[in-house]
Image 1 (tube, rainbow, N blue to C red):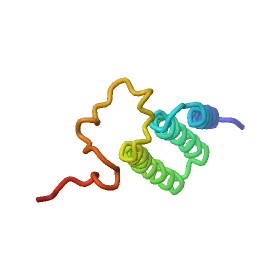
Image 2 (image 1 turned 30 degrees about the vertical axis):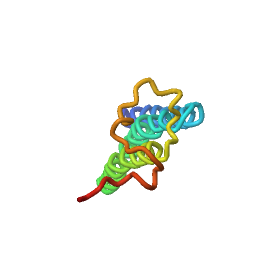
Image 3 (image 1 turned 60 degrees about the vertical axis):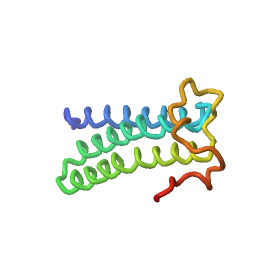
Image 4 (image 1 turned 45 degrees about the vertical axis):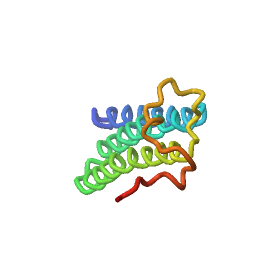
Length: 124
């Protein structure tokens, strides 16, 4: 017999799966590296959260809920940090697609020269 929680769980899982699909399509369709960091974090994390919520509603076990909560917390912490580090590496290696940038707020802060020479400021 289907209950209300089973229907809500199915809706959450389908919506989360669609958001993960949108994130995957965004990864392929975006033109440059900095644009690809957005679909790698926002819709992917929200999609995973909805899928895990659907699984928790379907299982209705405290142990599973605790484990799924740990998974989503870990994902919420690591995904933005990984995206930030990828963007930072792109900026440091001058692989940011400058022809598409409207405003470059980091240009005056970065030292001129190669990325491996001038990344670390003098600590004197």
